[in-house]
Image (cartoon, rainbow, N blue to C red; front, side):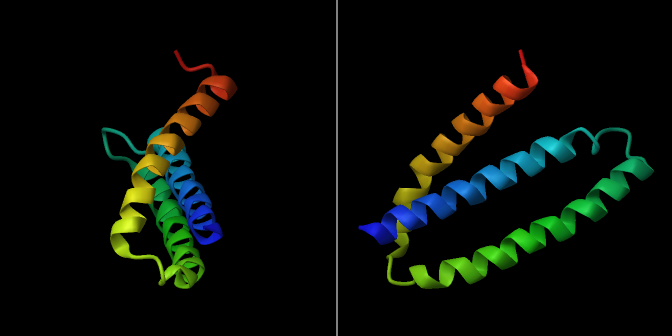
Length: 96
């Protein structure tokens, strides 16, 4: 049971980090494509690779969980992380 809770927590952190990165880099990458967009992409790619590398090392311990259980755990965690990041964005930045 604790393995599922730990997996859920890791999924929550992973999804939230990707959503926050998307929010941050969304301000810099836009039309028309400029030098600032290139710099933002060049900064963002290593950050995403670092997160994926960390994820691959952390998730090795969850090989005992079957894939369909991982998917069934990840779907509600995805919805919760979207709600959490949206709510925190509203609280911090006051999006309307």
